[in-house]
Image (cartoon, rainbow, N blue to C red; front, side):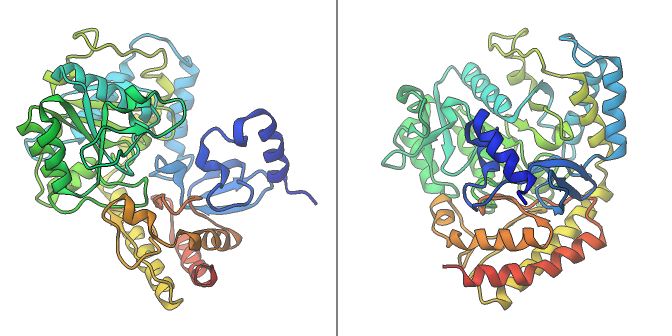
Length: 439
């Protein structure tokens, strides 16, 4: 009997490029047929064939509380009953902007004085870069190899042949002159950061960096590196854009920046981008920063940005409900679950004799099939990534849904209760054995 997922995938490929609307969903790096999800509740998802899985994808991060949290669903339903979209200001978007600004603080330090709501993380980072260029009057952008900031042209840039060279297009369809406005350097490399500013400093508008890298696997910043970025940028009259689209409000009430402030690494980014959790699973993202920079945006300043669905009332309602429910107790629950599963993952792979590391960035973690946590993209790519596909499928066969790529983080939710955590732990040894036998 043909699985409903196979039938849907065949149909989808006839009308959608690759059968999916975002590439990683196609299971390209693990093989097999993607699961077409029909519903989700709490810590579990159900596919089109009726199979249920314990979910460690969490919609790629937004489902901090768990899927279909009744209070979030109720807030969206109530908002929908009043209208789906207005193309006009609403009270809710003011409330959400206030919530964001109030959460991103440490003592008296408040890097977010103004907030602009948009619809996607790509739109947030694209706007942040335009804003940085407008605020500084400079053109060049510095980014780090392996960091993902959405699919706008200037951010799909690949490293050139040297540390401080202008970048090359990282995708078909990106004009070389646009890619050349981006300087791609190695992550966690103070010398590369110093070199790029030594050569191009007066022309650099900003450095953009994931607060903790989670798109080449979880690769945390070395102690002091984010502060060094801020200090170096400011010394040369450039801005620091901290990309918290993935980590914002997931690893700490004030995002990864808040986690670092709490640990004593104090720095102040000029612009922070948010997504995922901030919209509670609905299409919503944001950028925020100090007033002097953010007020360069239209209609106050000369940097143009607009969007019919920016601040959509349904998305705003989901975001408000999610942030209000994301209490210290929620973070404590997710942190404890992450500690437990990261420990179990490490133990299972060790027992199976698999060379590995389990990198962490707050409650985000993942697998690296190498003997140490990578510090940059080249090290992340050098791992024995072929071991992940059998590991992934072994977990799925036991009812656990993982991200379909070794280069993605695992996401815990407050809804992962004892039954789910115990089931995940029980599934790990067989998956570790599958990874061990891979070749």
